[in-house]
Amino acid sequence: MNHDTANSEPDLGAIFDAHIEHEFADQDVDATMLTMTAEPYVHNVPTLTGGFGGEGVRKFYSEEFVGKMPKDTQVIPVSRTVGKDQVVDELILTFTHDIAVEFMLPGVPPTGKFVQLPHVVVMKFEGDKVAHEHIYWDQASLLVQVGLLDPKLMPATGAAQAEKLIELIK
Image 1: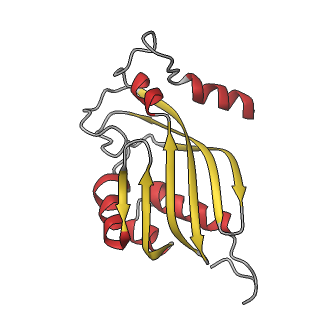
Image 2 (image 1 turned 60 degrees about the vertical axis):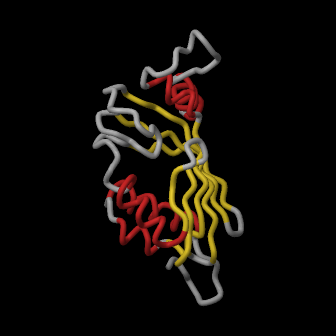
């Protein structure tokens, strides 16, 4: 995949983009899994959700993630760093919380609130396959945005995080 010659390095950014496209646009678990090693893992750091091993990741994608996000979900790129065997993307995920999003808000019924949430995704590769993903977001900001945390009671900023990033990248 994405090789000019047998000796060239894979285009990790393009593989990352294909993986995200399969998750969000195509909503195709099988195509997403084809971008990954046989025994990958996905770890959502704030909620300890995800999957470990081929079967665990497939189960997570099938039951909680791929095709399970709100219809208006968008991924807005902010920055990307590509290393020898790793890509780090900073992005903003936006959606209306009109369906349950168990991996981010376990046990929280839909609130109807619009969410703009900065993320950092660290994707590690083995050759041209995704070996693992570590996904970070500020859970306090998410809870403010869906109305479960009062920003007057603690220093949590809500959507202002994403709005400031969007302002800075324009």
